[in-house]
Structures are given as structure tokens and as C-alpha cells.
Amino acid sequence: MTQQDIRIALVFSHEDQSWIRREGIPVPAFWQGHTVAPALGDVVRVGGRQFVIEARVWEHDGAQPVLQLFVGGSHAQSDTTFG
Image (tube, rainbow, N blue to C red):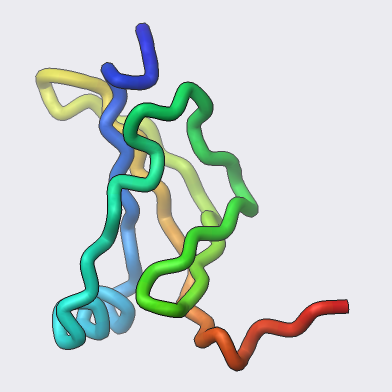
């Protein structure tokens, strides 16, 4: 099985889903065409906010495997600290 056979879906909290819909923010297919699946602790940025992958759940939708990535609550860019 190759990475192209796997569908990867981000799962957001209800609050973050509402924010994404309300603001009309597109969620890109981050891993399309990549050969390495995301790991726990990886961070994705959507609409200027960052989300940490907190859980991975494998499912099968009847046609192909689906890797659901549950992400933690969003943090605005100004909430990010370095050091």
C-alpha cells in the first residue's frame, strides 16, 4: 500500500470547526503526495493558527484506509512562544 491509497483527515474541536467555517478558511490536503504519514506531536498551521496532532485513529471507509488526525485546540500566532 502506498501513501496515495490512504486518505488523511484532520479532526478539529467543535469550536475550531465553527471558526474555520465562519471565517471561510480552506484546509489544505497537507499530506497529499507525501510518503510519510504525520506523527503525534506534529504541528499544522491553518488560517494563522497552529494545531498539534494529539491522536491518530485508523479507520476504513469501505473503499480505502482513513487516518484521522485529532488536533488540539488552536493557538493564534501571537500565542506562540520560542525559547
